[in-house]
Image 1 (spheres, rainbow, N blue to C red):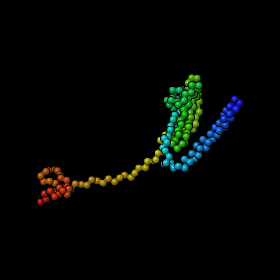
Image 2 (image 1 turned 90 degrees about the vertical axis):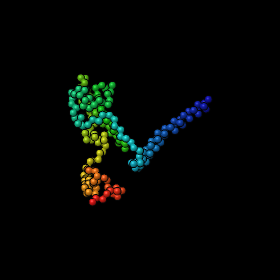
Image 3 (image 1 turned 30 degrees about the vertical axis):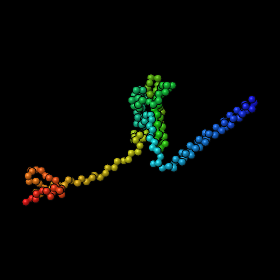
Image 4 (image 1 turned 180 degrees about the vertical axis):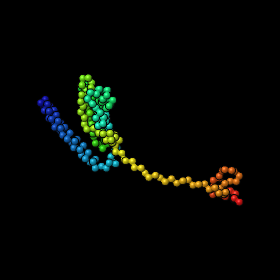
Length: 189
């Protein structure tokens, strides 16, 4: 009986000691994999779409916030908040999260605090992008439009009004001149 308890205890301790090293092995393998994929050219990597979540608040929108605004005015100006905490009913959080396909992440936060009358008391904010930067965040880099030189338009060839192309029997119509039709047409006198 004593040997059995001792065997169970030793097995449990050996398993616990063996499992403590697993997280470092996993971390080492994942970091080695990430550093190996850094050398792979971009066009060989799989496409990863940009992920946009939340409300993108621009600096122009944040500058329009004023102390004493109602919650309806704030909602009209900034939109519906992403987070309305049940434990902090006097605070609205506007969070914007962007994860680009290349792995770059951006998080921007704006918190609006209301007083007991549901009017803006104060707000805190990360640096917000202006309108142009916000467009670049959403749309990505856009190449500038450079107009091409206008194409030269060649006027259509003027029809030849010689008597050989007009049919004497029909007025106002022309027959197509082709090598086959030219042999069958009567010669003009």
